[in-house]
Structures are given as C-alpha cells and as structure tokens.
Length: 338
Ligand code: GLA
Image 1 (cartoon, rainbow, N blue to C red):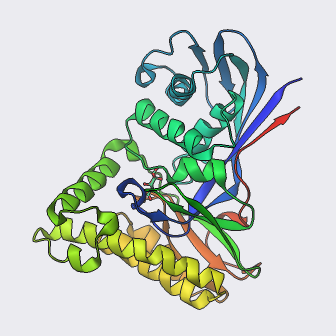
Image 2: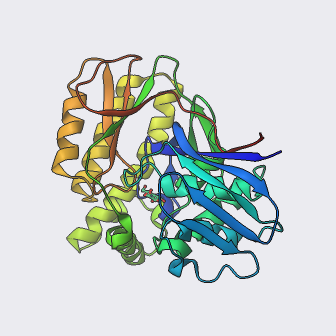
C-alpha cells in the first residue's frame, strides 16, 4: 500500500510582512496544492516531479548542504530531509496544481507535503511548520517567517487562521457564509530569493532597534518617532498592519463585510506606500476590483513585488480580471493510504 501526502498553498487575507517580526497574520488555505505519492522504505529519498526535469536523490545518511543540491527544486526536498531526519526513505512522485512564483506559497506547500510524506507529526503543527521554515532558509536562503508553512499544516476549512507569530497560537476565524475568496493573478512573476524580501526584513529589524522594543509591541506613534523616512514608513506599515489583523478578525466575526473591504483597502495602501512592495499592474487590478459590484475589497497578498491579489466578494460575483482560484478556504495538510 502506498501513501499520498497533500499540502495546500495559501492566500493571506491580512497581515503581510508582519510574521518575521513576531506579528499577527490571517491567511487561509486555497484548494490548490502539492501532492507527494509513493512508498516509504530504503535509505534514500528519491522523488521525481511531474512539472520539473530531474530527480531529487537524497541519502538519509548525509543530506549534505541543501543549498548546493541539483536540480534546484530538489533543494527544498534535501532541506526537509535534513530537518525531519526520517528513519525511512521514500520513493515517489511530486505533482502540483499550485502555480509557482505567484506568491501562493508553492515552496511552503512542497516542504509541508514532503515532510508529511516522510512522517512528520501533523498533530504538532508548529513543530512541523518550524522544521519546514528552517528548510526554506537552508534551501534558498530566504529569511521567511512562519506564516506559509504553519497555515499549510494547520488550516481549517471555511476559516481563515489568525496566527500570533510570536506565541504561534493559532485561532480559526470562520468566514461569513456569504463570502467567496478570489485570487487574481497579476501575471507578474516574482522571485523573493533575489534579496528584496531580505532587505525589507533588515529594514524592519533596524526600525525595531531604533524604537527600542519589539515592533510587535510598538504603536504607529512609536513608528513616527523614527527620523529616517524609509525606516519610519516600514515600521508604520508593520504596526498598523498588526492592528488591521485584529480589526479584520472582528469584522469577519461580526459579518461586517463593508468594514472588511475598507481594511483590505487600507492594507493595500500601506503595502504600496509604506512598505513599497506593490506594482502599478497590481494597483490597477486592486482599483478595478474595488469598483466591481459584489466585491467587498481587494489587496496585494503575500510578499509582493508582483504575484497575486486577494479579494473578498459575494458568491459568484463576475469580475473582468484573470481569476486564478475562487472558493472557500480548505483544510491543511493530510496523509492518506492509497
Ligand atoms: C512570504 C514569506 C512569509 C511572509 C510573507 C509576507 O510569503 O514566506 O513568511 O513574510 O512573504 O507576509
């Protein structure tokens, strides 16, 4: 009998560039993800990929430095093997219906799917997510936060997940019944391993240093005390975005969807003006969606620099922009016998 491990991609409804500063986020899993099928056993992890050439061939005895493994996609596999250190190998295949390079966490879904196939304990989501986050750092050197990996493990159907990235407490926040999530593809590819993401993170750390306490505990008024205009704007984004996460939770719980729409607009403006991670194409998409009847609101989602827009709308709302996925949130990673 074989195994089938599945892990979803995500969109983030609120709270971007807050996770690595111990802040608040509100992502949800979408009905697209990565599947690993195969059998446990042996001393190697050997995985082919339907979408990419080459094979990941990782010896359990010595996974080596994942950053030098070829082909490049196999670095994620090698890093997960190094982190999970499974007793048994695995021979199988990777399949995906989750587009890459669009800000939907395809690398986190790959890490979580591989970890699940290798026997990671899904009843301890934050342990699995932290192993996969370290794997991301080791594989491609992106100093990401915990959001993508944790939501891929711990997501709940029909709910967004409020994650406190300092305590790693996770709280499902049910979406009101009359809401559909839209994921819109900007068509602009992004590669956050080019240093742009690391630069933003370093700016936030510098801002935190100037304020003299964790940005998570700082207020927008604290941010305004910073003289350097760039660092001031970065800190203003993080402090206001943390506040918007809990405001969004309240709006969803109370079914106040117009308020939710206003919060999405405010978050987009903050990511565009204070955090400088939007693009003219994405700004146009967000404006067009905001003007569409039935759409409550829209914002850039994920790391930015291209990628996707997330919108909340009434079910079956017609939009004139390219929809990559629409629906209700799905649950997190699963392991099934096949
Ligand atoms: C990427 C990272 C996450 C998070 C977002 C921005 O998706 O992997 O940890 O920082 O960007 O919110």
